[in-house]
Image (tube, rainbow, N blue to C red):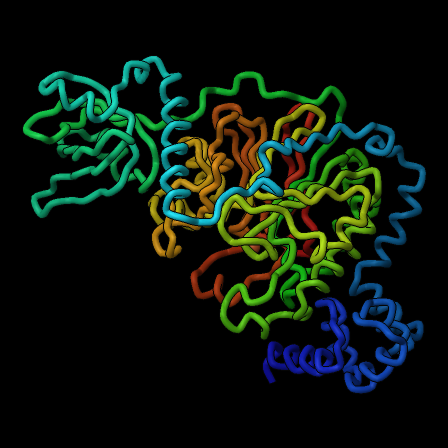
Length: 510
Ligand SMILES: [Fe+2]
């Protein structure tokens, strides 16, 4: 029988009895050929809701031999040896006081004003236009840009307009047209093939992005000579910590999925506790940031229930909280939201309700935040965003791919927006909640920019900004296999906040 079917059968049997199981225990049940009906009976008698490692070990009455095998499976034996080695180590992060500041003004939680009316959307897009227009006007060449209506009164003169892209189309003869608008009116731009740089930029434009066009009005057409995107200025002096503390970047844990790599995730937690290689770095980790998809969720895609070991959203967060409990309490943990979390799908997303994620709120060193959010760690300004709109960027720009998410993340900075294209139907763009404040605009240039979503690690420096995509803790899904994606699970980018050097810590055996 296929392994998936066996797993589904066990999960189904346990679920009927109101019991959940973690992926690690599921593997152990299969490996040890555990009698699932008897296990369920015992668990119900003991009054537990989750088959934990501890409960399972008790049930199968591990003798010395089994105990050794199970320990090897969990990597516990190796860790136990490490405990002796590190017991005298100095833990810098424990001695250093936390300097975590979450910038609440950049988090939509408890501040949502919209109810999705047409008026909300009109005001939102006007605001988006104004925000990027003001950023563009900081560039000397765009300072004198006119409105569309004003520009139409100067035919034949070379001038600039700041506008939002509404449509791109090409004629059979190879002419490229660009439909744009601003609050005063609209115009049709014409891009001729002789202007190679303009053509190159034209092919990269996304609907709804705000740009500056230079050109001349002639016969109701605007002949485009140049296209300017807002972009960021060079961050020549990124803020640095005055102590050698580190931050670890994670995302896409997907607790509840039977593909969640629980054993490896626990190995990461043990590493933070000083067990395993490079414990010197582990002892300096003061901050752990997790950029969303904390759990796999329920009903996120068709037939998802067949791929869950914990088919209950409350229990998924409870189990996640149980795992986080073992992270040393001197480490600050910041949890963002993603498209699998139990919050609204449209961005910006508020943080998880206390009613659903209560166990997380009970942990004193855990901070649950909305998506996106700015925060500071020892003075280093960091923008954390899940990255759901990376699908749109990668789908539309030929030089962006799932294998190199850091390149796609640069496109956010170039456009100064985290959701460059709106698509109410999600076919051509992303879902936006039209808030009266634009939480999706990148108004401030961060020192570190952290995303997840694509399940692949990547990092780069763009104009002085450290870009990090933090990969995943979920093994390759069937969907990713169909698309040919190569996730890089269990790799944690870690940054030294004093010098911004990035290293990757590996928690998967191969
Ligand atoms: Fe994910």
